[in-house]
Length: 186
Ligand SMILES: [Fe+2]
Ligand SMILES: [Fe+2]
Image 1 (cartoon, protein in one colour):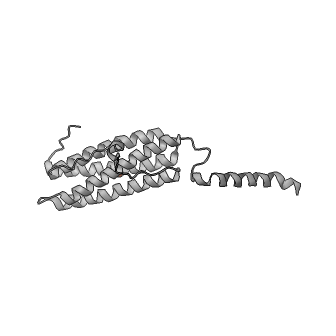
Image 2 (tube, rainbow, N blue to C red):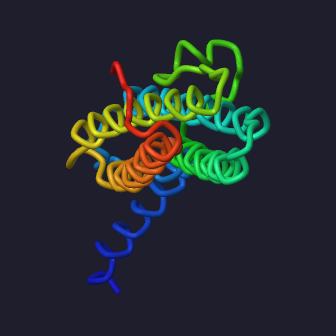
């Protein structure tokens, strides 16, 4: 039985390490990202998504006017999708052993998008388009940052980025439909 000994002890070592690292969840020793930085970036993205959920939800309730029904529906759909992004980011933070920060305190400091409600339908659409453009820039930067450091996080962010591009496109189309041409200062 002695020839199996190295294998057995190796297996025991693997089990021991697996137990030891159980609390670290999906975090393995070959994780190449700096975990603290990853968690900070993901929590900032989570804050951005929460602000987007709040803004779109507020808009979906507040939108009024003769052409508002379709726009309300679009806002509500975006709110649901931003919430899905928030949940996926929170799950990833959790997987990496972090704490997903849903605390409203400091939310605006962590978020890269703003909460501007807009007074008219066109204002709302324009503010959302601005917010989506900021989100797209932020996610592009994050995708570049994670690159090969953490491919799982990168893929999640790429997925969200694709959705934000759709959102920006939706807002752009609505702006054109309601205003004739996009009027953006930034
Ligand atoms: Fe989003
Ligand atoms: Fe979005």
